[in-house]
Image 1 (spheres, helix red, strand yellow):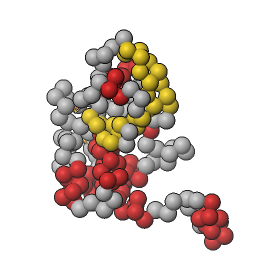
Image 2 (cartoon, rainbow, N blue to C red):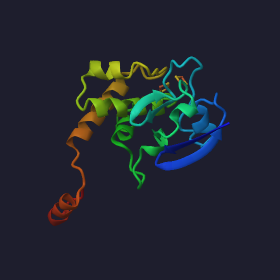
Image 3 (cartoon, rainbow, N blue to C red):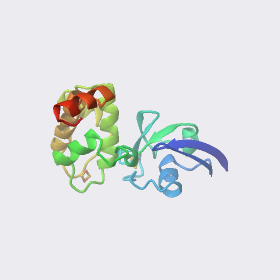
Image 4 (tube, rainbow, N blue to C red):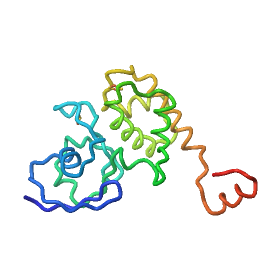
Length: 175
Ligand code: FES
Ligand code: FES
C-alpha cells in the first residue's frame, strides 16, 4: 500500500492505495465519485476524463499514485456552491448535447479544458479538442453547438464583484 493525498472537488483525501490502482478506480470505488464513468478498457473513449491540476486526463490511463498531491476536479465538482450549473453543463443541457449521457461527464470535462485554453474556438477546433472523447449517440453536432454556446456564454458573462453587484442592485438587476 502507498499513502497518497489528493484534493478532489475541493476536499482533501488521504488514503492508502495499491500501487496498481487506477485513478478512475480510486475516484469511483474509494471516494464515491461515480459521476466519472468507465466506457472502455482501452483508454479510448474519454468517458473517464477529469481535470488533473486543470488539465484534462483520462483517469483510466494513469495510476492513483501518479495523482498524489494533485488537485482533481470531476464532473461532480463543476457546479457552483449553490448548485448552479457550470456554463458548459448548462450549454449541454440547453443545446441537447447528450442523449444517453454516458459520454457526457468526460465530454464536459474535456470541453472545460478546451475553453480554458481557447476562449473562442472554431467548430474545427472544438472537434479537434474533443477528438479523444467518443459519443455513440449524438453524431457530435449538438455537442459542438453546446461547446460553442458555452464559449459564448463564458466570454460574455460579467463576473460578479462587489462593484457589479452594487451597480446591479442600483439598476434593479442581478448579476
Ligand atoms: S474509460 Fe477511460 S478512456 Fe474509456
Ligand atoms: S450521449 Fe450516449 S454516448 Fe454520448
